[in-house]
Image 1 (cartoon, rainbow, N blue to C red):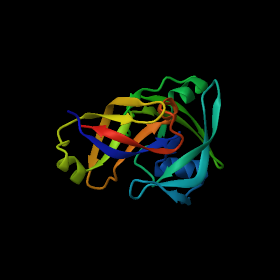
Image 2 (cartoon, rainbow, N blue to C red):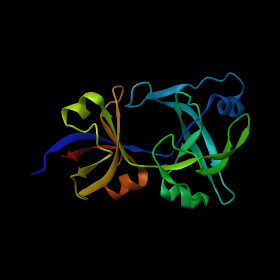
Image 3 (cartoon, rainbow, N blue to C red):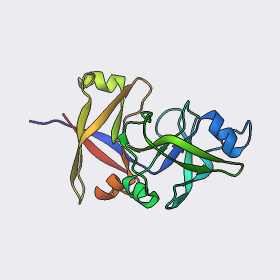
Length: 192
């Protein structure tokens, strides 16, 4: 018999993580991001600043920057966004960008032709190490999470990301969230 553990569910809309070099090129040398609001993961925040991302076919405006800065620039979009842009980004876990799609990024002070860095983020569960130990999840790569609402969906192959610094949260992109009938946040059930 399965055990169900309640977990918070969050929709992660299209966004960009910038390297220091790319932030300087887009916003000016020495520019510091302005915090709009904190995110659920410790130290993470949505910045006031946005950029435009383009491909030959189309552009997406107002793509939110998430801070703090990272070693490499990375853009996370949905499959719907990818089609609108005419891109074929791979489905990847965050920070695995080698060989991924590229695009053009436009900021107020400059433009960058990104060679790689555009991905569709694999749905994932941010899992604190203490939670992983409590439920014997340390050696697992994937879990399943049920959304129990009018749409009643179960997501399989949810990538398990374990760190002592994480707060428990299941992240879906907007396409997955729409399929599950979730607008912004919800509750799901980790199936053990």
